[in-house]
Image (cartoon, rainbow over all chains, first blue to last red):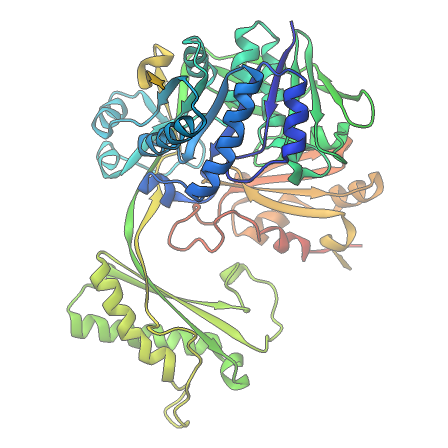
Length: 452
Length: 101
């Protein structure tokens, strides 16, 4: 049996090629699957439980997919709804779906898969040894779990399969692995599991596995021996090279991919061109694990920030920018400690010299002098009020600080007034761990919702 | 002495999750691939990124003419000191690395 999975793009919000999508619908897919996010844009989205993409854009693109689903008469699945896949973001996606369903007069069975975790339950699981670190995980204690504003577990194929088994028209899932929403149906229908996971990894970024990667739309056909990649936009071609090279993308290991319940091994996979557009892949292996684990992601508050920006254009100051910046930090810190009575460890002041070494800091190898430098000042403190007040302490230094007492008072360029910009609460990722489950569904909640 | 970026087709860097960075060196030809794997040591790459050699994972992938390095991120993604949310710029550090003739 062949299972056709239509993937409109790498993420909802990145747009897709409507002509290519229509072409995919005409090929009679068995499911339409799209990813709604990842950790790639940083910890604030998970910390706040919000989407990175505009609601209006998301709604326009989701509406197009809901229309395509109605036409195809097959399930539509979104994983990692609202960028982070926390329950709040799932509710946001469900609201958008309701609004569109009303507009389109669609009557829908929705399966909602929630992946947020209770921090107290996670803390206990950690104490009981059911949460273990992955390589390069931060050191955490049981108490650290309580500091997270959101913890999500990444659902795999089992949880998506449970949602599909409700015969839902649309599955709105919280955090899933990027691949699970694609691999689930082929696995349910008995296609080769190695092919299912491998094809899912190749397809999860849409047409990024082909030439003309921005076109988005790709079809992956799964069967009992392998899978076939078919990019659908005009001028998009998959080759054995573009497909196999996609295993490199955002993977720390290009041959092994860990998923809930096992791992994919593509060491012996072979890639063959069927013609100048389609690629056939066989020989991918799925290796089940003894324990069933799901990955956890967590974000917690990491202080409040105030930022200021100023520009150095005077050659003398550009040349001595690092000395100037270090002197400002030292003098401003002393003044803050003296006047506000705060302890040295309660705040940070950083001046990044953009154009000189803001990308790599001390690892920068270039020594050539730029003609101007942007100075990005970042104040981090435990409250917004304190961060903003320290920003006000910093302001006159950035405006007028001389390199030596002997020189005339300089003035530097500020592009903004007020110069202090509040970044508000910031967040940090604090988990790179897996949670062991006896029953794959035990950390997830499946809800059925009827609309219309 | 030429820089790595002048010898190969493309170098890209990207997050591999919030805690890892991965850098793909697309050599472009078998010749460039052989040239690079003979001259680019993991220790050199570790030094450029300021991490320990034993923390770096290296993959020499002959059929793609790719050399890939994965390493714990120099700063955890989005932490106070992280200058690069997506890990996009780090490829430039390798592109500018001089290789012995």
